[in-house]
Length: 367
Image 1 (tube, helix red, strand yellow):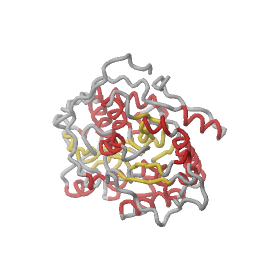
Image 2 (cartoon, helix red, strand yellow):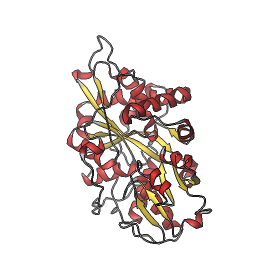
Image 3 (cartoon, helix red, strand yellow):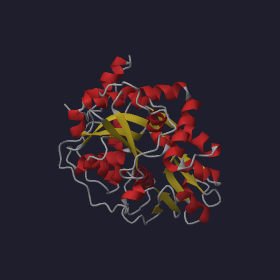
Image 4 (cartoon, one colour):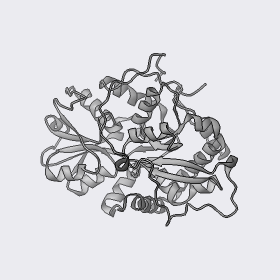
């Protein structure tokens, strides 16, 4: 898909969920006392930098960050520069933290990355790598919904207005010829914006009939008797689409390129470790989830959720542009100029050193 022509990038006013700093984890550091993220004695700081602040969600779709944190794989690459971690429950709060300088690098979904890039006119962030594909499903109450056609007239939850899954569901609804007002969620399908933490309880109470959600929420709903009606991967070429990217504050990339390379090298090596050690990686991710949220996932949720997510170094740039187009069609975004949103030069440098082929920015990279 060719890059869009130069146009004024602007977002329509999107009403966002009211999030307090405490609720979103803004600025809160994860506890990693039982993990392996320790600075080795005598390790040298990269460029004399004391620390790098890394943000991610306590979700399995952020498996690279969870495992890299737990196994100390980022810290190993950073030497004496300390990896400090913060957790977030929503993309806008992580973008806010990046803009404020509270974090330097973050794992985040495509929609907030696009919003953050366009809102700052391309000045505050760059996508510097991929992290995960897949892990999003439409799970429904099988007593109420037996086929895709039955979704019409039902109440379906998405995590947040304008978030990655919300945009995907609105696009799917539109492609079926159904009308829904994106802002209110009212129409041929009722879109109920519900925090992922609350969605399983909403399902059990009957206040929603299903949900288009990421893992592990999807598998939590299945454990409550829900049925997977559609896997979003089936809607994409080669069943691949970006669900998690790695972003960096532009000024941090400019000032500390060696630190950024070290984090990316940690991500690449973490993904390789996950591929070679899937059971250990799954256990590590779950242990870090417990450290971050206070609760590990039970096997009936963890096992199917883990299988549906693929870690990847490739940012799958063409699918990000497609997701932006979906937001435009839904009326949530004016047509953005995404050229320059990617800077994959540090990642490709790391990949070459690892004997790996480079990844492509689909014409959306910095020149």
